[in-house]
Image (cartoon, rainbow, N blue to C red; front, side, top):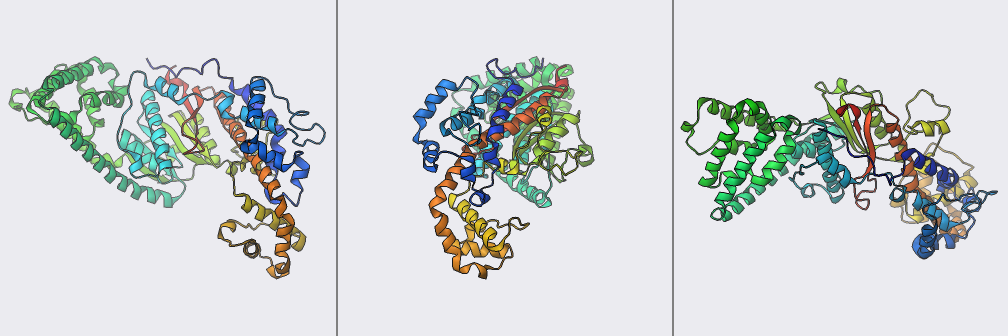
Length: 595
């Protein structure tokens, strides 16, 4: 019987108390995060928020004090960390202890909060005794980062789909369609890729066509390799091959009760162990194939549609070999001939409809989106999202909880700086659906991160930040402008010097550069010796970035745990953070799968 994945081990900490501790720490540290580096010099941010000298901060954060940091960590990692009076000054609220600050940030990052479910544990619970499948290598037509993401996520999605007994997947924010294409070609899942950009959708159509060529070429090479290997071993193992095929027949007969819900997983077990593409490489194997067909069909009343269902998910070449033998078909009864003909027809239909397993669609998804208006043949399915941007990740979870036909969700979010926050813009409509917060605890607290805090993970070159901060001094002192609807943008990368940067920026801001030509370098010289302040300040913000990500993702997880229809939900480190920094997936399964 299907059982939900095992609960988190007892050593893992409860989600809501962990959220409270992270929120408590960040409440003290947020002034650092919320500060805008553009205003670093004009608002005197270092003097207001940090007590230690910039050189001391840089020494600690660059690794000059790792031994001391480890010593603190060993002493305090399992206790409630103090904040005011130890890390921050109780009166001025300034940061006073960088060692403990860095320790606290580490303590409240995902590597230590103890709420993540190991990917291996989840896959083991989903697979049971079944083994995974192998197929096309994505690194043949994707870059290293995308290949890693698609490989890891598609394997997990396939296991969830098999576990839930579903074949339809909805890829929200599908972009260029890499994940959608791979899920359809590698795992025979019917995938609807939905993206708000028509350009992306059209591009996904064309890209999917090209990927199919890679897929066919890869399969052809694989078949050639298997044939060569089989010919080399033809004289050594004919008896062994026959025994394997008979074992497959017995496995088919013994598993007839579970084929409908696990047809693809069963094939993944069978094909590697015998390899239908190997059967037709010798007369001995042809006879083994006849034995397999005859034995399988001897219990037609039990297998009938189940076997055909399996044939439908086999690669077309495997089905062709299975359904067309070089043996004397006159020895078969009429019913067996009809049965084999049906299998052949099914195989051809499967081959002809292969290109229709992936459907790129254009639509803007919100929390109120009715998927049935977009997908006419919507059935029991799961939702996935690979680096869904801003509010789209939150809306994916809301749709999942609201729609009974969606049985599971696997969402990896990104672009936290684009999240809408309920308590950041109080003047906006209170009835609007916000990206953050989602859970009731943070809503009750009126929690607000602020865009600058959510941008903390974006580490820009220090010189770029320095140029922009000094430019702000010029704009305020020379032009009297403190706010503007215009933006400088990526001017730094297109500038040859500070003078060039200032002139181009003023032009973008529609300010006359003739007023400042003679004193541009004076401003540069005035502040260049304070560049290390800006570098140290930015590093303090970056240290806090993992904690902010923890807060945002725990908010989503707690939202799921508040829902009555969720059987299991968890956070999983799905990707290698070196290859893909936004590496955590929010996963949930509906309760009625088991109850």
